[in-house]
Length: 582
Image (tube, rainbow, N blue to C red; front, side, top):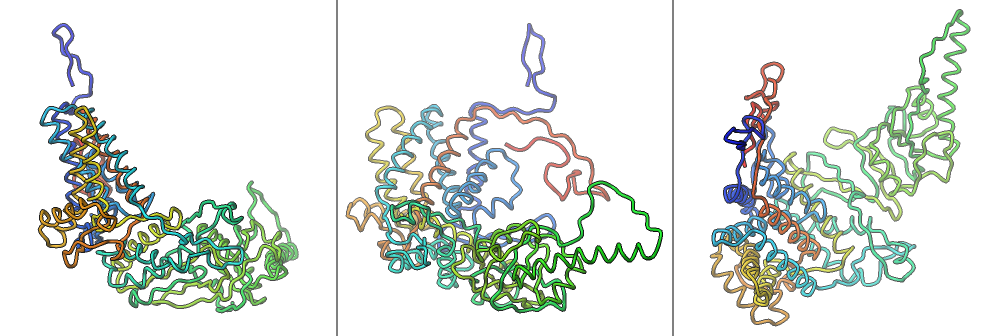
């Protein structure tokens, strides 16, 4: 970048930097974002295709999950990375709808480019998009249906909430919609039942809800632990009313099975503590050495005795357990596991009703958790610990089985989506029709709204409505139908304006226009709102960029032992210097 001062060039940026401004910058950014949307477009819907992603080390990922595809791709363009962030945000907030958000964001930019070419200022386009988005969100609220009795929260006695049983099928339909078109679709009925039971187990009522004065139901899906082991088939997946730990019993003389378990959760090492300052102990006789070793053994024996005196017959320790302590625990008939993950210890606290203690000396009977059974089992050659039959647990485990690592990874992603969408419904209680129904209705209503705008923003709002139609159009195209014919039929159904017609969507298997509510194709309102908001935010942010300044990259030194091409570790692109493409 060079300026002029009295005819003398003045360098503002370092040599080698690149700059694009005005329409050139806008065009490059829009093209990059559209390329990202195009990459995941074919994965949308029940008949969406999968992508095979091969990493620089030869690791293979097969998936049609939008956010996973974008995370695995080595994207360099800053604008394209913004679209990837859209998918990540949607995934973190609601778990599903990532592909919808990215595809919609790309289409919004495509329509905006048409307006820019006609001479509209980017600020006018972004204002029109914002107005249209606000209208679309209000329409979403209006067309959403409240599903009663799916709160999933339990009363103090653990019984089901009012109306919960009648609407469990609704939750299963929503879970099945989330996994339709993915690898695990063949097992969707089975997985949906597991997902619904798991989420309802961890759903907790707020204080006002418990007292019968309404209140919010809270679902933290982090309390659903997913453990997986290669072998068997997906149908062997099970929901454990407790936790599965990828750990084994520390001592062969300890029991492998404990019924009526009293569990001590210890966040400390069962070892002799080392002093923080260096110290030197001089031993001048064998008697002193014997006394020292005996005292050390007595200290460790006392640790095991503290566990025994508390009434515990199972110890789950986050840190190490000395061999001497192991010996005495085994002698007392206590099962012990060491180096459990901190997150697993927190889940065990919720599942068993126990309390995590920091020293065994303070352990008491009131700190112990309860489980009907704690057992070490050998699964596919590996030993695992099952803590199950917990009463009214607020943390559970799903133990996945499958024929290969790729299968397990994809089923885990599917289960993640199912858990999140069911959690959204339990918290919010509102759903909308899927199958492109809600997007078609939004397009119709936003188009009507655009007519009320007086300025040039009207043109942007109209393009916003057109962009919304990319979802039903893509669903039709991916399902092998003529997208124009199906879109026309959908719009005609919605323009009739009857309640049933507002839920009219595309059956991806038959090509018929059906009432998606009756067909059981439902999605959480929160998912659609978040996808819409994230897509609009990304599109408007990219549209407002009129200058891209890329500094020259510093060259990375070659990796040890003859590194990757260009001196980049792991074969990362661009490692040998240069600017990121934009």
